[in-house]
Amino acid sequence: MHAEAQFVEYKEALDWLHGLLRFGQRPGLERMQWVLEQLDHPERRIPFIHVAGTNGKGSTCAFLTQMLMEAGYSVGTFTSPYLVDFRERIRYNGSMIEEADLLRLVNEVKVLIERCERETEFGSPTEFEVITLIAILYFSRVARPAVVVWETGLGGRLDSTNVVLPLVSVITNIGMDHTQVLGDTLEEIAREKAGIIKPGVPVVTGETRPEILAVLRERAAVTKSTVYSLQEHFFAEQVEEELGQQRIRYSSIHRRHEATYRLTMNGIHQTANAAVALMTIDVLRNYFSFLLEEEEISRGLQQTRWPGRLEVVSPRPLVILDGAHNQEGMEALANSLERLLPNDAGLHLLFSGLADKPLSEMAKALAPVKAKIKSLNVTEFDFPRAAAASTLRDAFLQGGWAEENLEAVPDWRAFLLSWMREKQSAKADDWLVVCGSLYFIAQVRAFFPTTVEEAGE
Image (cartoon, rainbow, N blue to C red):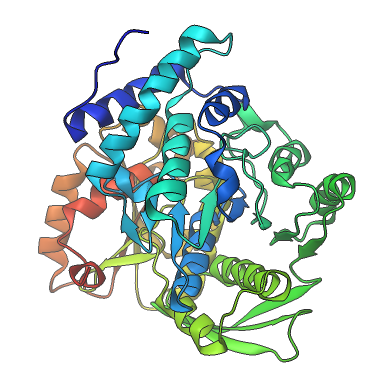
């Protein structure tokens, strides 16, 4: 056995990890299973809450993490993608994994990755598989949280996170995203996501459409799992909303009384995400003797922030970032803006997106706020899969937008600089909303000085 070279620098380890992207996305769990077998199955020593769904996974994970932490539980969180720092994906009690821990675990896993490539017919694990393995090792050996909130990468059934046996499986909702991998109909996509349902493990879902619930229930019948669905076993409605907060009313079959909670996240979709997180907590309290007091739950929901979701990065002039990056996401954004925008304020959009997304469908989804939009600026950003500004222009024209409303912006930084300068005084009541891709939002977010909340971290 030849000695493998070890990485000394964190950056080398990160470069090696990103280099695995050349193996692309390869559905299937055999590489994961092989490596975990070599490691003596560390994933069996941790309680997981497994979260899948098309939209709202990140916010639901954030609500769950915050509520559990408020109640004094130590919580590991595994999410993707990241906004600024790669280490955001693996957190313990909200803090990112230390560079030194990541370096050590990469060195340990690298040996097994190379062996898997050499010794098996499965080939090399992909980047996401390796990150998942590192998260499992970090949580099982280094951080040892009481519970891990575990977000799927893509789909569910063949996703590399699907090697765990969780306490609860959560499926937020089903939408048309990643159709090239997951299938062309909602039912096919639902079948992939239902792949996280395990024998005897309860399922909580925010999905309400009968044809999709039928797919989830069919899988749950095979695994003898109970399905708890929104509007059937638990209920939530928005009581009132303004920019920066909303109040919701929640009830479930596991509670005697309904309760009202305050969220600092906007959007009717966050009402549903919070409800799914609350029902998951209800199941944990009822069947797994988790102890969370009502005020801890309330505080947890109120303190949950998730960057890039209707996030105000500048109050005056008002600049809002939103990570909507598929058709359903854009529909949710349009819906929120329609309700939140004051009558006398004009709406300006700065949009950029990835070439592999349904861009003209996304453009169409903005129709409800068309009348309020004063300018629509499409731009490109520095990212391998980013669409060219001309492509975005065509997509908006195809999506029913008029030529005269569209502006292709060559340099988004210059655009933002002049926006911030000009608008300081004159049109202070106008809103600028930046959207279209999480990767774009990340770059725009870095352009703004640190937000108030983060200064305290």
